[in-house]
Amino acid sequence: DNAGTGRMRWMETPLVKMLEENGVDINYLTDDDVSDGTLLRTQSIVLPGHSEYWTEIERSSFEGAVARGTNFIAFGGNTGYRRIDVDKRKIGNRKNFRDLGNPESTLLGSMYFALDYYSDLMVQEPDQWPFSAIAPSTNIAGIYGYEVDTYMDATVPEIAVLALSKDEKDGKRATTTYYNAESGAGVLNM
Image: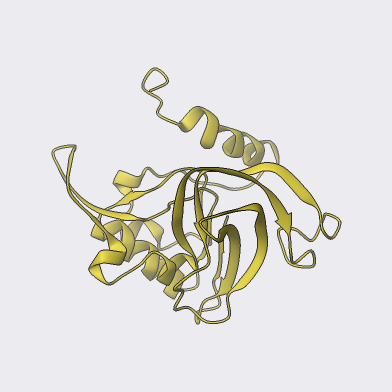
């Protein structure tokens, strides 16, 4: 879609532009290029948009990076949900990581729960980054959208729910979660 750019124009480009304008030292990597070796020297991994489909190599590389102390931020919902195989640029053998005994919540602290869902974000922890610069009980209109995650079945220690969606779907709310991994890495899933 979008003349071959996928969702890059509206998911990745605004964040890249902001980081570059603010002089952040950043490198770029496509999903296809992720391997344990490509993540060895980075301090933080930022996934700005939709990153649903991962190979086993991608998943283990992200897990290994967090285990070594690399911070991890996912700004899009439904991250790392499906395990795939790639053969000559063809995607096949799609299976949900959670159905294989390794739900996305073991890395992200929360997991995918709804499609076609839109709601405002209500800050719950105003003293916690990234919300520490805004007033308590602030609502941010339209932040949660299309595919969203929620805190459930997490196996990582001491997950903080930093924000909730204003509206429920099937008795659940979209959540923004944060936890510190045993390595000291911070993991934020928005």
